[in-house]
Image 1 (tube, rainbow, N blue to C red):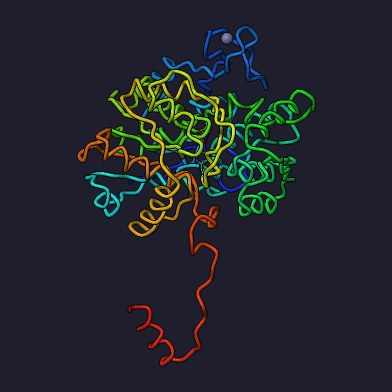
Image 2 (image 1 turned 135 degrees about the vertical axis):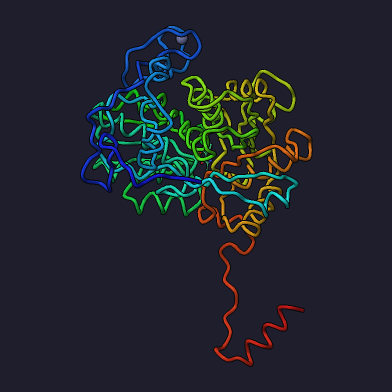
Length: 438
Ligand SMILES: Cc1ncc(COP(=O)(O)O)c(C=O)c1O
Ligand SMILES: [Zn+2]
């Protein structure tokens, strides 16, 4: 993996929280919003639904102009963070605060590869972001826009990882953070968001109820940027940066297979969009990539639709899984994710909670990477994909690990229990050790 930090040309200097990134010379590729369903253009603002057909809005870029402007050499020389591909993000200006997000390591994992019958496996370790999940990426882009629109409160409906990411970004931008979470959320995630200064609102109900409440308050309250509601078109684009980085970290090539988890399905679909855009702007040769996704069977509406070859994603009313970070019963991007799986000849697979815990342990014990339940689901889905023939032993595979294991200790039998202490004597240790070995 090569990351150039020695040469930092001026327009992209970003060191800590000050001085600010120098914005001179930045020419955005972003040209506005448009409806994902009917293509109607929409003026840039904190809006998320098409007034004509109620479809979701998404950013548009001048890709032919970027094709002429962007070069591998220039991109390689920029600081290794999320803003490296700023022209492909929905920005008019570069953010002026610290860029601490993104450019997580792409690590070769031969011991894990051997354990699951693959020859070439990489992990994109996105648990290594400021709040230990990939959600820092989506929040970074949403926050840049929220600041531009003049919002003073940053909010979200969260399945767990978004809440601390919003809390962290709000703190770094001097905004107020109010985060809404289902009442059954892991204590570690609530504690992390509170430690970062957010007001945590625990809502009695599943994620979909939390999301409905946030939709309502977006209408009612002025000055609130709800990152995954009225900032959603900007927010969702942050996930694409994983695809850009993987391509660059592989030396400007794409893998055969990418494996990622799905909650709303946004990350999964934006990964496909990211790889596609890089080919469109001529930074990489276009090659087929299969997208494999994972969900927990206890809340796996997209996997269920994929497996039953249905076009319709039936909502799950009552999620029953340890994988709370992925527990979205009505996934907004479900139909788009199904399309990506089918057109790429990939798959979206459901895995049991037991398979998830097994996979968490396998990753920890083979590679020393401790992931949360979403990462367990992703690896378990890859194992199934290998077993079912969606992935071949010779495929080059990138497994996207999106969150850290300290956040979901409660799912491991020995997660929070402590071993009995022993007296500080060699004799005591020796007999204890023999007992262990027996
Ligand atoms: C750790 C982790 N991975 C993956 C996802 C999936 O995100 P998306 O809603 O983009 O499908 C989430 C969502 O909260 C998450 O917390
Ligand atoms: Zn429309």
